[in-house]
Image 1 (cartoon, chains in turn brown, blue):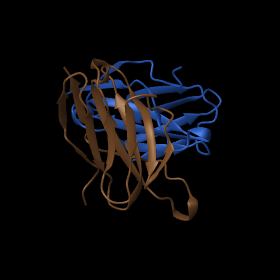
Image 2 (spheres, rainbow over the protein chains, first blue to last red):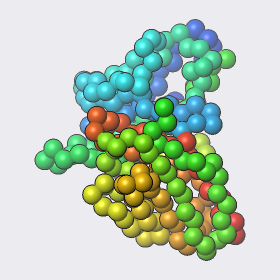
Image 3 (cartoon, rainbow over the protein chains, first blue to last red):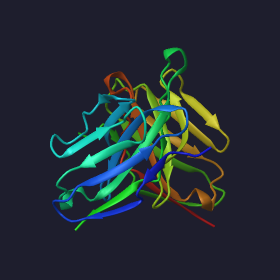
Image 4 (tube, one colour):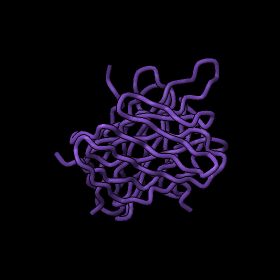
Length: 118
Length: 113
């Protein structure tokens, strides 16, 4: 009964390169969320996705960042042309579909990907 | 703007005593509140939650209290154990924030043997 899986756990990129972070939700979960934690801060919401749909991307920077959750395979958070300020821990969370349309608010987090931009 | 605030960056407690972690929020649309525990280099782990229709929820050693009029919630851990030492985050969701958790900055709890 695996939890939320994220890979890689650590990623080092040079300025200007691309970073791809992957997230496999818990079995049976159809909602995926991405959060970012900058040093000495709390977690900040980035994007909420269901299969093949972006539900809320209000926390995503307008440029260079994109996310997808395809019909098959993991969710991907993509950061193009990384800058030093992108260095952070990126956490993915998942939650199940609510029964009879009821909300399910508990989100279960993966171990995170620590991105370091040199 | 910081809609969820944890004003105590750290708390130190003796083993066996009660730990009380506090959280304040400003958005009156929030209607569901959660507490997460986080160890270094790991993801947050869900602890306990409370809906705004309740004022208390209990699960073993953990109890969460909600005071809607004061927009304040607290997490009580009793008795505290050294293994409880971690960073504790409160989070809130609701209204137009459905699906999106808004986190506080976290409180570092240290429980001394």
